[in-house]
Image (cartoon, rainbow, N blue to C red):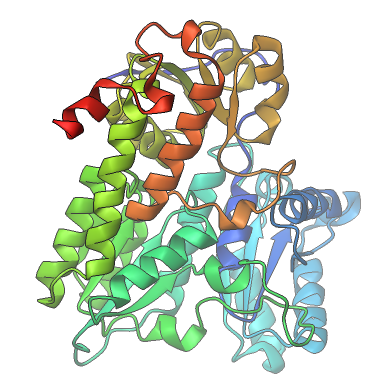
Length: 453
Protein backbone atom coordinates (compact mmCIF):
# COMPACT_ATOMS: atom_id res chain seq x y z
CA UNK A 1 0.00 0.00 0.00
CA UNK A 2 1.54 3.35 -1.01
CA UNK A 3 1.84 6.40 1.17
CA UNK A 4 -0.73 9.03 0.14
CA UNK A 5 0.71 12.52 0.64
CA UNK A 6 -0.69 15.98 0.02
CA UNK A 7 1.46 18.77 -1.39
CA UNK A 8 2.08 21.58 1.11
CA UNK A 9 3.05 24.20 -1.46
CA UNK A 10 1.61 27.68 -1.05
CA UNK A 11 0.26 27.65 -4.59
CA UNK A 12 -0.31 25.28 -7.48
CA UNK A 13 2.18 25.45 -10.34
CA UNK A 14 0.94 24.14 -13.70
CA UNK A 15 -2.26 22.65 -12.19
CA UNK A 16 -3.15 19.04 -12.81
CA UNK A 17 -6.69 19.08 -11.43
CA UNK A 18 -9.87 20.62 -12.76
CA UNK A 19 -12.71 21.87 -10.60
CA UNK A 20 -15.81 20.14 -9.28
CA UNK A 21 -18.33 22.27 -11.24
CA UNK A 22 -16.69 21.23 -14.51
CA UNK A 23 -16.98 17.56 -13.54
CA UNK A 24 -20.64 18.00 -12.60
CA UNK A 25 -21.37 19.84 -15.85
CA UNK A 26 -19.87 17.01 -17.92
CA UNK A 27 -21.94 14.45 -16.03
CA UNK A 28 -25.09 16.44 -16.79
CA UNK A 29 -24.09 16.41 -20.48
CA UNK A 30 -24.63 12.66 -20.41
CA UNK A 31 -28.39 13.23 -20.00
CA UNK A 32 -30.64 13.61 -23.02
CA UNK A 33 -32.15 17.06 -23.60
CA UNK A 34 -30.22 18.54 -20.69
CA UNK A 35 -28.95 22.06 -20.14
CA UNK A 36 -26.13 22.23 -17.57
CA UNK A 37 -26.00 25.52 -15.66
CA UNK A 38 -23.20 26.84 -13.44
CA UNK A 39 -24.38 29.11 -10.63
CA UNK A 40 -21.58 31.66 -10.68
CA UNK A 41 -19.94 34.33 -12.77
CA UNK A 42 -19.81 34.26 -16.55
CA UNK A 43 -16.06 33.65 -16.43
CA UNK A 44 -16.50 30.35 -14.58
CA UNK A 45 -18.79 29.04 -17.29
CA UNK A 46 -16.68 30.43 -20.13
CA UNK A 47 -13.63 28.57 -18.85
CA UNK A 48 -15.47 25.26 -18.75
CA UNK A 49 -17.07 25.88 -22.13
CA UNK A 50 -13.71 26.53 -23.81
CA UNK A 51 -12.15 23.50 -22.14
CA UNK A 52 -14.86 21.12 -23.35
CA UNK A 53 -14.99 22.59 -26.86
CA UNK A 54 -11.23 22.14 -27.22
CA UNK A 55 -11.37 18.57 -25.93
CA UNK A 56 -14.46 17.23 -27.73
CA UNK A 57 -14.43 19.68 -30.66
CA UNK A 58 -18.23 19.75 -30.50
CA UNK A 59 -20.95 22.26 -29.72
CA UNK A 60 -21.25 22.29 -25.92
CA UNK A 61 -24.48 23.28 -24.12
CA UNK A 62 -23.52 25.16 -20.97
CA UNK A 63 -25.23 28.17 -19.38
CA UNK A 64 -24.61 30.48 -16.43
CA UNK A 65 -26.56 32.45 -13.84
CA UNK A 66 -24.18 35.36 -14.60
CA UNK A 67 -23.48 36.54 -11.05
CA UNK A 68 -21.79 39.92 -10.65
CA UNK A 69 -20.46 41.91 -7.70
CA UNK A 70 -23.87 43.21 -6.58
CA UNK A 71 -25.84 39.96 -6.95
CA UNK A 72 -23.07 38.04 -5.22
CA UNK A 73 -23.49 40.21 -2.14
CA UNK A 74 -27.29 40.40 -2.20
CA UNK A 75 -27.87 36.76 -3.14
CA UNK A 76 -28.41 34.91 -6.40
CA UNK A 77 -32.07 33.92 -6.27
CA UNK A 78 -33.14 36.39 -8.96
CA UNK A 79 -30.29 35.30 -11.22
CA UNK A 80 -31.22 31.63 -10.84
CA UNK A 81 -34.89 32.38 -11.49
CA UNK A 82 -34.17 34.43 -14.59
CA UNK A 83 -31.72 31.84 -15.93
CA UNK A 84 -34.21 29.00 -15.46
CA UNK A 85 -37.00 30.97 -17.13
CA UNK A 86 -34.84 31.94 -20.11
CA UNK A 87 -33.57 28.42 -20.60
CA UNK A 88 -37.05 26.93 -20.31
CA UNK A 89 -38.53 29.40 -22.81
CA UNK A 90 -35.74 29.27 -25.38
CA UNK A 91 -34.10 25.85 -25.16
CA UNK A 92 -37.08 23.75 -24.00
CA UNK A 93 -34.90 21.28 -22.07
CA UNK A 94 -36.11 17.98 -20.66
CA UNK A 95 -33.96 18.50 -17.57
CA UNK A 96 -31.70 21.19 -16.11
CA UNK A 97 -28.57 20.38 -14.13
CA UNK A 98 -27.56 23.20 -11.77
CA UNK A 99 -24.10 23.18 -10.16
CA UNK A 100 -22.72 25.74 -7.72
CA UNK A 101 -19.26 27.34 -7.94
CA UNK A 102 -16.78 28.68 -5.44
CA UNK A 103 -18.19 32.20 -5.75
CA UNK A 104 -21.73 31.34 -4.67
CA UNK A 105 -20.60 28.71 -2.17
CA UNK A 106 -18.44 31.30 -0.42
CA UNK A 107 -21.44 33.64 -0.28
CA UNK A 108 -23.54 30.79 1.10
CA UNK A 109 -26.49 30.88 -1.31
CA UNK A 110 -29.31 28.58 -0.15
CA UNK A 111 -29.99 27.21 -3.63
CA UNK A 112 -32.28 24.43 -2.40
CA UNK A 113 -34.47 27.04 -0.69
CA UNK A 114 -34.32 29.30 -3.75
CA UNK A 115 -35.57 26.48 -6.00
CA UNK A 116 -38.54 25.78 -3.72
CA UNK A 117 -39.57 29.46 -3.79
CA UNK A 118 -39.04 29.72 -7.56
CA UNK A 119 -41.14 26.64 -8.28
CA UNK A 120 -43.91 27.92 -6.01
CA UNK A 121 -44.29 31.22 -7.85
CA UNK A 122 -43.40 30.00 -11.37
CA UNK A 123 -45.88 27.27 -12.35
CA UNK A 124 -44.24 26.88 -15.77
CA UNK A 125 -41.23 25.37 -13.98
CA UNK A 126 -43.24 23.07 -11.71
CA UNK A 127 -42.94 19.96 -13.89
CA UNK A 128 -39.40 20.60 -15.20
CA UNK A 129 -36.81 18.34 -13.51
CA UNK A 130 -34.11 20.55 -11.99
CA UNK A 131 -31.23 18.73 -10.30
CA UNK A 132 -29.02 20.81 -8.03
CA UNK A 133 -25.59 19.74 -6.79
CA UNK A 134 -23.23 21.60 -4.45
CA UNK A 135 -19.77 21.67 -6.06
CA UNK A 136 -17.50 24.36 -4.59
CA UNK A 137 -14.36 24.56 -6.70
CA UNK A 138 -12.14 25.51 -3.75
CA UNK A 139 -12.18 21.87 -2.62
CA UNK A 140 -12.11 18.40 -4.18
CA UNK A 141 -11.70 17.92 -7.94
CA UNK A 142 -13.24 16.99 -11.30
CA UNK A 143 -13.95 13.38 -10.35
CA UNK A 144 -15.73 14.45 -7.16
CA UNK A 145 -18.01 16.83 -9.07
CA UNK A 146 -18.96 14.04 -11.48
CA UNK A 147 -19.73 11.69 -8.59
CA UNK A 148 -21.87 14.24 -6.76
CA UNK A 149 -23.83 15.09 -9.91
CA UNK A 150 -24.64 11.44 -10.67
CA UNK A 151 -25.63 10.86 -7.04
CA UNK A 152 -27.90 13.93 -7.15
CA UNK A 153 -29.54 12.71 -10.37
CA UNK A 154 -30.19 9.29 -8.86
CA UNK A 155 -31.62 10.73 -5.66
CA UNK A 156 -33.84 13.20 -7.52
CA UNK A 157 -35.18 11.02 -10.33
CA UNK A 158 -34.82 7.28 -9.71
CA UNK A 159 -38.01 5.67 -8.41
CA UNK A 160 -38.68 2.34 -6.68
CA UNK A 161 -40.48 -0.14 -8.92
CA UNK A 162 -42.96 -2.86 -7.99
CA UNK A 163 -41.13 -5.52 -10.03
CA UNK A 164 -37.83 -6.30 -11.72
CA UNK A 165 -37.36 -6.53 -15.49
CA UNK A 166 -35.39 -9.71 -16.32
CA UNK A 167 -32.16 -8.98 -18.18
CA UNK A 168 -32.19 -5.28 -17.29
CA UNK A 169 -29.05 -3.75 -15.73
CA UNK A 170 -27.95 -0.27 -14.71
CA UNK A 171 -24.40 0.82 -15.50
CA UNK A 172 -22.99 3.82 -13.65
CA UNK A 173 -19.80 4.94 -15.40
CA UNK A 174 -17.01 7.11 -14.03
CA UNK A 175 -15.57 10.31 -15.45
CA UNK A 176 -12.41 8.49 -16.59
CA UNK A 177 -14.31 6.62 -19.33
CA UNK A 178 -14.50 8.06 -22.84
CA UNK A 179 -17.62 7.93 -25.04
CA UNK A 180 -15.91 5.10 -26.96
CA UNK A 181 -15.37 3.21 -23.70
CA UNK A 182 -19.07 3.46 -22.86
CA UNK A 183 -20.06 2.24 -26.31
CA UNK A 184 -17.68 -0.72 -25.98
CA UNK A 185 -19.22 -1.67 -22.63
CA UNK A 186 -22.73 -1.42 -24.07
CA UNK A 187 -21.85 -3.80 -26.92
CA UNK A 188 -20.27 -6.26 -24.49
CA UNK A 189 -23.26 -6.26 -22.13
CA UNK A 190 -25.80 -6.55 -24.95
CA UNK A 191 -23.87 -9.52 -26.40
CA UNK A 192 -25.12 -11.47 -23.36
CA UNK A 193 -28.74 -10.60 -24.13
CA UNK A 194 -28.88 -7.97 -21.37
CA UNK A 195 -30.39 -4.51 -21.71
CA UNK A 196 -28.29 -1.77 -20.13
CA UNK A 197 -29.17 1.74 -18.99
CA UNK A 198 -26.00 3.84 -18.77
CA UNK A 199 -25.77 6.87 -16.50
CA UNK A 200 -24.33 9.24 -17.59
CA UNK A 201 -24.19 8.26 -21.26
CA UNK A 202 -21.68 10.44 -23.10
CA UNK A 203 -21.60 7.93 -25.95
CA UNK A 204 -24.91 9.35 -27.14
CA UNK A 205 -24.30 13.05 -26.54
CA UNK A 206 -20.57 13.62 -27.12
CA UNK A 207 -19.53 10.86 -29.50
CA UNK A 208 -18.74 13.26 -32.34
CA UNK A 209 -21.70 12.70 -34.66
CA UNK A 210 -23.38 15.29 -36.89
CA UNK A 211 -27.04 15.72 -35.84
CA UNK A 212 -29.85 16.05 -38.33
CA UNK A 213 -30.87 19.38 -36.84
CA UNK A 214 -29.56 21.86 -34.29
CA UNK A 215 -30.54 21.56 -30.66
CA UNK A 216 -29.55 24.01 -27.90
CA UNK A 217 -29.52 21.15 -25.37
CA UNK A 218 -27.65 17.85 -25.33
CA UNK A 219 -28.47 15.45 -28.15
CA UNK A 220 -28.49 11.86 -26.96
CA UNK A 221 -27.65 10.47 -23.56
CA UNK A 222 -29.79 8.97 -20.81
CA UNK A 223 -33.44 9.97 -20.95
CA UNK A 224 -35.30 11.12 -17.85
CA UNK A 225 -37.82 8.28 -18.10
CA UNK A 226 -34.94 5.77 -18.25
CA UNK A 227 -33.53 7.16 -15.00
CA UNK A 228 -36.94 6.94 -13.33
CA UNK A 229 -37.15 3.26 -14.37
CA UNK A 230 -33.71 2.28 -13.04
CA UNK A 231 -35.40 0.78 -10.00
CA UNK A 232 -36.68 -2.07 -12.17
CA UNK A 233 -33.20 -3.37 -13.03
CA UNK A 234 -31.83 -6.66 -11.71
CA UNK A 235 -28.48 -5.18 -10.74
CA UNK A 236 -26.41 -1.99 -10.90
CA UNK A 237 -22.87 -2.22 -12.25
CA UNK A 238 -20.59 0.60 -11.06
CA UNK A 239 -17.44 1.20 -13.11
CA UNK A 240 -14.77 3.04 -11.13
CA UNK A 241 -14.40 3.56 -7.39
CA UNK A 242 -15.99 7.02 -7.75
CA UNK A 243 -19.30 5.41 -8.74
CA UNK A 244 -19.71 3.36 -5.57
CA UNK A 245 -21.41 6.28 -3.82
CA UNK A 246 -24.16 6.81 -6.46
CA UNK A 247 -24.57 3.03 -6.78
CA UNK A 248 -25.24 2.76 -3.04
CA UNK A 249 -27.61 5.74 -3.24
CA UNK A 250 -29.53 3.97 -6.00
CA UNK A 251 -29.63 0.75 -3.96
CA UNK A 252 -30.88 2.59 -0.87
CA UNK A 253 -33.66 4.27 -2.85
CA UNK A 254 -34.77 1.45 -5.13
CA UNK A 255 -33.42 -1.76 -3.60
CA UNK A 256 -31.44 -2.69 -6.73
CA UNK A 257 -28.24 -4.49 -5.61
CA UNK A 258 -24.92 -3.14 -6.89
CA UNK A 259 -21.53 -4.54 -7.82
CA UNK A 260 -18.29 -2.61 -8.37
CA UNK A 261 -15.66 -3.04 -11.08
CA UNK A 262 -12.91 -0.61 -10.15
CA UNK A 263 -11.20 -0.86 -13.54
CA UNK A 264 -11.76 -2.47 -16.95
CA UNK A 265 -8.30 -2.03 -18.50
CA UNK A 266 -6.16 -5.15 -18.43
CA UNK A 267 -6.52 -8.89 -18.95
CA UNK A 268 -7.49 -9.95 -15.43
CA UNK A 269 -9.92 -7.06 -14.94
CA UNK A 270 -11.82 -7.92 -18.12
CA UNK A 271 -11.82 -11.63 -17.34
CA UNK A 272 -13.64 -10.83 -14.10
CA UNK A 273 -16.09 -8.55 -15.91
CA UNK A 274 -16.99 -11.05 -18.62
CA UNK A 275 -17.19 -13.87 -16.07
CA UNK A 276 -19.72 -11.80 -14.11
CA UNK A 277 -21.81 -11.10 -17.21
CA UNK A 278 -21.77 -14.80 -18.08
CA UNK A 279 -23.02 -15.77 -14.61
CA UNK A 280 -25.61 -12.96 -14.58
CA UNK A 281 -27.10 -13.79 -17.98
CA UNK A 282 -26.51 -17.53 -18.16
CA UNK A 283 -25.28 -17.10 -21.72
CA UNK A 284 -21.81 -18.11 -22.98
CA UNK A 285 -19.24 -15.49 -23.90
CA UNK A 286 -19.52 -14.63 -27.59
CA UNK A 287 -16.85 -15.92 -29.95
CA UNK A 288 -16.03 -12.31 -30.82
CA UNK A 289 -14.81 -11.61 -27.30
CA UNK A 290 -13.01 -14.94 -26.96
CA UNK A 291 -11.01 -14.00 -30.04
CA UNK A 292 -10.38 -10.48 -28.73
CA UNK A 293 -9.03 -11.98 -25.52
CA UNK A 294 -6.70 -14.21 -27.51
CA UNK A 295 -5.53 -11.17 -29.48
CA UNK A 296 -4.82 -9.30 -26.23
CA UNK A 297 -2.76 -12.18 -24.86
CA UNK A 298 -0.77 -12.28 -28.09
CA UNK A 299 -0.29 -8.49 -27.95
CA UNK A 300 1.04 -8.79 -24.40
CA UNK A 301 3.49 -11.48 -25.52
CA UNK A 302 4.66 -9.31 -28.40
CA UNK A 303 4.99 -6.17 -26.31
CA UNK A 304 6.42 -7.37 -23.01
CA UNK A 305 10.01 -6.95 -24.30
CA UNK A 306 9.40 -3.22 -24.54
CA UNK A 307 7.48 -2.80 -21.27
CA UNK A 308 9.59 -4.82 -18.84
CA UNK A 309 11.54 -2.59 -16.45
CA UNK A 310 10.37 0.67 -18.01
CA UNK A 311 9.80 3.57 -15.61
CA UNK A 312 6.52 5.45 -15.95
CA UNK A 313 5.27 8.71 -14.40
CA UNK A 314 1.48 9.24 -14.29
CA UNK A 315 -0.60 12.29 -13.40
CA UNK A 316 -4.36 11.75 -13.48
CA UNK A 317 -7.63 11.66 -11.58
CA UNK A 318 -7.65 8.78 -9.04
CA UNK A 319 -9.66 6.22 -11.02
CA UNK A 320 -7.72 6.84 -14.22
CA UNK A 321 -4.45 6.71 -12.27
CA UNK A 322 -5.43 3.36 -10.76
CA UNK A 323 -6.65 1.93 -14.07
CA UNK A 324 -3.51 2.84 -16.03
CA UNK A 325 -1.08 2.31 -13.15
CA UNK A 326 -2.28 -1.23 -12.47
CA UNK A 327 -2.13 -2.05 -16.18
CA UNK A 328 1.45 -0.73 -16.52
CA UNK A 329 2.48 -2.77 -13.50
CA UNK A 330 0.92 -5.93 -14.98
CA UNK A 331 3.14 -5.52 -18.03
CA UNK A 332 6.27 -5.15 -15.92
CA UNK A 333 6.66 -1.38 -15.72
CA UNK A 334 7.70 0.51 -12.59
CA UNK A 335 5.57 3.48 -11.49
CA UNK A 336 8.22 5.97 -10.37
CA UNK A 337 5.85 8.93 -9.98
CA UNK A 338 2.11 9.00 -9.28
CA UNK A 339 0.40 12.37 -8.85
CA UNK A 340 -3.34 12.81 -8.53
CA UNK A 341 -5.94 15.45 -7.73
CA UNK A 342 -8.08 14.32 -4.80
CA UNK A 343 -8.54 11.66 -2.13
CA UNK A 344 -9.97 8.30 -3.17
CA UNK A 345 -10.06 4.72 -1.97
CA UNK A 346 -8.45 3.75 -5.29
CA UNK A 347 -5.17 5.38 -4.23
CA UNK A 348 -4.55 2.64 -1.67
CA UNK A 349 -4.08 0.12 -4.50
CA UNK A 350 -1.71 2.04 -6.79
CA UNK A 351 1.37 -0.18 -7.36
CA UNK A 352 4.01 2.34 -6.24
CA UNK A 353 5.67 3.58 -3.08
CA UNK A 354 4.04 7.01 -2.91
CA UNK A 355 1.04 8.85 -4.33
CA UNK A 356 1.03 12.63 -4.14
CA UNK A 357 -2.01 14.87 -4.35
CA UNK A 358 -0.34 17.72 -6.19
CA UNK A 359 0.23 19.42 -9.53
CA UNK A 360 2.16 18.94 -12.75
CA UNK A 361 5.26 20.58 -11.27
CA UNK A 362 5.33 17.82 -8.66
CA UNK A 363 4.94 15.24 -11.42
CA UNK A 364 7.78 16.75 -13.46
CA UNK A 365 10.17 16.78 -10.50
CA UNK A 366 9.44 13.12 -9.77
CA UNK A 367 9.66 12.03 -13.41
CA UNK A 368 13.31 12.90 -14.07
CA UNK A 369 14.29 9.23 -14.44
CA UNK A 370 11.09 8.13 -16.18
CA UNK A 371 10.89 6.59 -19.66
CA UNK A 372 7.32 7.81 -20.25
CA UNK A 373 5.12 10.64 -18.98
CA UNK A 374 1.35 10.05 -18.88
CA UNK A 375 -1.11 12.87 -18.20
CA UNK A 376 -3.44 15.25 -20.04
CA UNK A 377 -2.34 17.81 -22.65
CA UNK A 378 -1.11 20.34 -20.10
CA UNK A 379 1.83 18.04 -19.41
CA UNK A 380 3.32 18.33 -22.89
CA UNK A 381 5.81 21.03 -21.93
CA UNK A 382 7.04 18.97 -18.99
CA UNK A 383 7.66 16.01 -21.29
CA UNK A 384 9.59 18.26 -23.67
CA UNK A 385 11.78 19.57 -20.86
CA UNK A 386 12.41 16.04 -19.60
CA UNK A 387 13.07 14.77 -23.10
CA UNK A 388 10.86 11.68 -22.74
CA UNK A 389 7.87 10.31 -24.68
CA UNK A 390 4.49 11.71 -23.74
CA UNK A 391 1.16 9.83 -23.73
CA UNK A 392 -1.98 11.93 -23.40
CA UNK A 393 -4.66 10.52 -21.12
CA UNK A 394 -7.66 12.16 -19.48
CA UNK A 395 -9.31 15.55 -19.92
CA UNK A 396 -8.36 17.91 -21.50
CA UNK A 397 -6.71 16.55 -24.65
CA UNK A 398 -6.81 19.59 -26.91
CA UNK A 399 -3.74 19.12 -29.14
CA UNK A 400 -4.81 15.82 -30.71
CA UNK A 401 -7.93 14.79 -32.63
CA UNK A 402 -10.33 12.05 -31.63
CA UNK A 403 -10.18 12.25 -27.83
CA UNK A 404 -13.78 11.05 -27.52
CA UNK A 405 -12.99 7.96 -29.62
CA UNK A 406 -9.98 6.77 -27.64
CA UNK A 407 -10.68 3.28 -26.33
CA UNK A 408 -9.07 2.05 -23.10
CA UNK A 409 -11.48 -0.63 -21.78
CA UNK A 410 -12.31 -4.17 -22.76
CA UNK A 411 -10.03 -6.68 -24.44
CA UNK A 412 -9.94 -4.61 -27.62
CA UNK A 413 -9.20 -1.33 -25.87
CA UNK A 414 -6.44 -2.89 -23.78
CA UNK A 415 -4.94 -4.50 -26.88
CA UNK A 416 -4.84 -1.21 -28.78
CA UNK A 417 -3.40 0.58 -25.75
CA UNK A 418 -0.71 -2.10 -25.46
CA UNK A 419 0.36 -1.56 -29.05
CA UNK A 420 0.27 2.23 -28.82
CA UNK A 421 2.40 2.46 -25.68
CA UNK A 422 4.63 -0.40 -26.85
CA UNK A 423 5.38 1.46 -30.07
CA UNK A 424 6.32 4.55 -28.06
CA UNK A 425 8.75 2.50 -26.00
CA UNK A 426 10.12 0.84 -29.16
CA UNK A 427 10.65 4.22 -30.82
CA UNK A 428 12.67 5.43 -27.85
CA UNK A 429 15.36 2.93 -28.82
CA UNK A 430 16.30 -0.48 -27.36
CA UNK A 431 19.79 0.80 -26.67
CA UNK A 432 18.27 2.96 -23.92
CA UNK A 433 16.63 -0.01 -22.23
CA UNK A 434 18.80 -2.98 -21.23
CA UNK A 435 15.83 -5.30 -20.67
CA UNK A 436 14.61 -4.96 -24.27
CA UNK A 437 15.56 -7.78 -26.63
CA UNK A 438 17.26 -5.94 -29.47
CA UNK A 439 15.87 -8.19 -32.20
CA UNK A 440 12.33 -8.36 -30.84
CA UNK A 441 10.94 -5.84 -33.29
CA UNK A 442 12.06 -8.10 -36.15
CA UNK A 443 10.44 -11.19 -34.66
CA UNK A 444 13.76 -12.55 -33.32
CA UNK A 445 12.85 -12.45 -29.62
CA UNK A 446 12.80 -15.46 -27.31
CA UNK A 447 9.02 -15.69 -27.32
CA UNK A 448 9.13 -16.09 -31.12
CA UNK A 449 11.54 -18.99 -30.74
CA UNK A 450 9.38 -20.50 -28.01
CA UNK A 451 6.35 -20.46 -30.27
CA UNK A 452 8.36 -21.97 -33.12
CA UNK A 453 9.36 -24.85 -30.84
